Length: 174
Image (cartoon, rainbow, N blue to C red; front, side):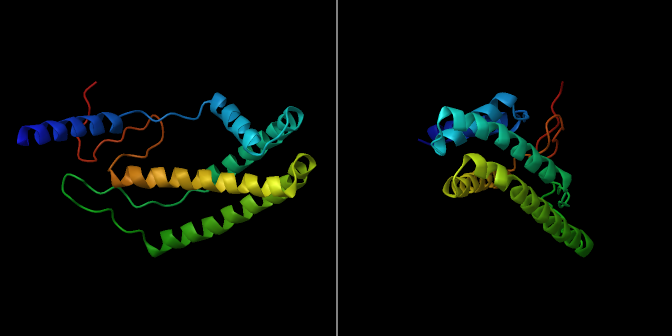
């Protein structure tokens, strides 16, 4: 029985390590098309309306993506997992900068929503627009939840191409 549990633990450890080292990828343009099709289906649009909607939504989504990447937030530096040290806290200045950046980003997002609302209104009903915003919110919550789960597991959340060494693992030999 003990051997079974040891074997199971070893398998889980190896699986977790393999998953943690998987490279992150940028979204492929086909994923954007798939997302737009899923939204059109969720909003129950006919083909002509769906085509108009996807053109507008692609522009809207790109504008939102630019705003979200424009504002950078200070993050605590990574602690040394080998020594068991925690991440150092942010300074008051860094926290204040993050708060002000959130205000600015919220204003920019609101401006984009106000700018695109009349365009969405040409092809969607107010009820469908509200549903679109709810779907976007749920998607954001799912992404945030996945991010938090990865952090709890000690898995890195770096950008594609970055080496995320440390985290209690020795560097990979290439």
